[in-house]
Length: 512
Ligand SMILES: [Cu+2]
Picture (tube, rainbow, N blue to C red):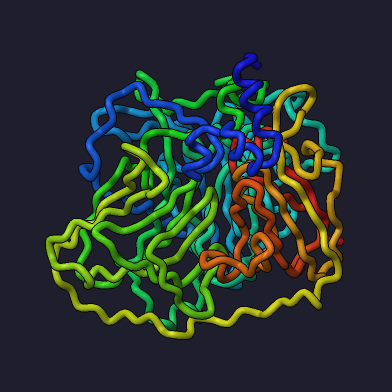
């Protein structure tokens, strides 16, 4: 690590308040776009709002009496992301994002993954209420069909390693929600997702379909992700080992996180989409490694939030902006009937500058008949109260050292597959308190939680509903409450800044 970057990295180790007072943090942190460093593209950036929005293909399952079965091949491919340029990607079935999987609540979904990539992979269904053996634990590797020397991998006596392919079996005993699947391989999640290993997985149910929300081509999944491109048009990522075979981590300057200067939505740079002057349902996912966004509509307009990470809210909430951290989701309705036909409605990012201040554009192209509704009552959410909690635990998310190198740690400890930070009993309700030094989006596997407090105040306007990822600001403490039910076993919780995650900011809990 160079002296300069080490000094800057170490400058983050104090409390954010002290840093801000001392003027030690750059404009990055003050602007709140997350914790990270900008990587600039070396190809000319395309003009915004020229490339059409693509909706990822929905996979058709093989249906049996018991389950819906899908097959995905993980392989290298190329994609035309910037017009006229071929970008090599790592893909699920050849595209970025991968195909969308749709499940019915309560009906088992099996996804057969075959790994034709040159490195091991792991698939995690983010937001899935999934048995531990199917959850994509980072050492449960699917080795390449072409072979692999397992000496390259972290030792974990409990790891279930498979050769070439495996089935992931998801019972789908959970509410309708916008989930996503992505690579979760030990030490290499950031670069693998950056190369393209991410896709939507939607769960539908009768409760949600009875509401009459906008549907069909008026329901748009939108995966927002920033990327940078090298001089050949490949994704630029500062891996120490660009083969992603042996040495994990990024160049010292990017230890805080990697920001790109091109904003992609469903794999297209600043796309444009024609809409009718009617209501649309936008399932917004921040699929970026480190970048936060604060989304707003220009020339003005409201997002009507109907859902969060884990599905429907109890009642709609209006917002004039939406802050979103990596891995968070918002399910919102935008009524394009509020604009005259011909209006260009731009989804902007108030935390960005220059090219990163814009995300995509909707063109209100025509009138349309609209039979959709937004009921005043959407769903019911089981209340969880402090009195129900059988344990209160606290975890700090901070800079730290892993084997002498700069990294990120939870509770002072770098990740180890063997150490359990918590062992909730099946069915228990617990309160977990997270404390952050810089921006950390904290994600729990297995459970949905509710935000109980932010700072010492009640939850904020964007904390509603059941969540699985909660964004912490510098110096902030957040309490969440969850019931650890469904399955016993070992699960992860971690920071979803992918560079932090790869540099040891993960820990285990075990439901016993
Ligand atoms: Cu983090």
